[in-house]
Amino acid sequence: MELQELALQIKTNKLKSLYIFTGEEVGIRTEYINIILKQSKAKKVVCETLAEAIVKMQKGNFISDKNIYIIYDDKEYKQKESWWNKNIIPQSENVILIYSDIDKRTKFYKAHQEIMVDFQKLSEQILIKYIQKEIDLSNTLCSKLISLCDFSYSRIMLEVDKIKCLDLKADKAFQELVDNNLIFDESKEDIFNFIKQVLLRKLKKSYILYSRMTENPLGILSLLYKGFRNVLMVQSCNTSNIAEVTGLTGWEIKNAKEVLNNYTLGEIVNILNEIRELEQGIKTGKYPAEVVINILIGRCY
Image (cartoon, rainbow, N blue to C red; front, side, top):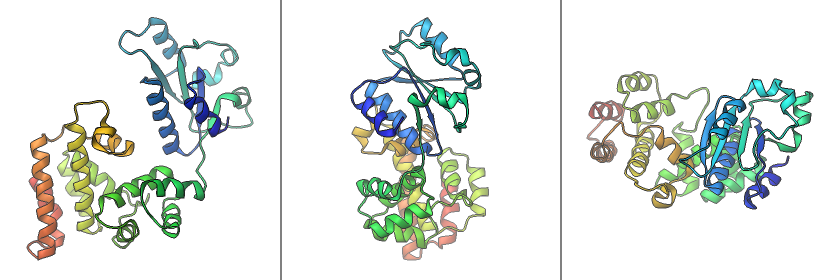
């Protein structure tokens, strides 16, 4: 099944009972799952096997009107050939089986081609459209960003979010990230893990991670500010329409939800003020740049 066909089925609300998602582009796959959940006004239910999901369907659901069952690498179903051509899933239910990789030479692949979506990395032209939908970045720098992120949609969107948080025009903000060595590098993930550990309030681990980092402290402070700001907005939001109320992207909301409730709202406000003070202190010479991150971690205790 082509991706365009899946998009049409979502748009016309004519979802099949069973889909199989595979491929290396996890970011786009996740986006489509979220769109399906939103369009169907459904709750995501993760199960270990299709058999487990069917048992849950048979028991009925009294909490949510609609469920979408998500199952990762169900080896049992893959080997249970007797199930493949049977309508074992009720038409009113929807299941998405996710496999990291499927051999196209197998019977399994051939039996499921009509419901299988292979999420491969997008072309440069399409990725540029995604980037420019979010920020006004030149085509040349879009191409450079795509290359740096190895055509990974998730990694590109992470960098786009970082560009947004800098109070600069997109081209200049991107160059700032490049100059300060703040573009994501799979071989150098400490900065992103560090930000998450601070937000999780795992401060001893944060100290250890920071001790081996070489990134510009001002850039790190900017990322920490955005991280705490996003957590503040999500943690204080009392409605399910978080994106509409806060203006945050789905990616930002997802990341914030992973680190909620480790600080009170009052503590987060104080930390945001501390970050602004430290940024100003570097610029005025009050604080040496090399000590500000340790100062901030200490104030998070």
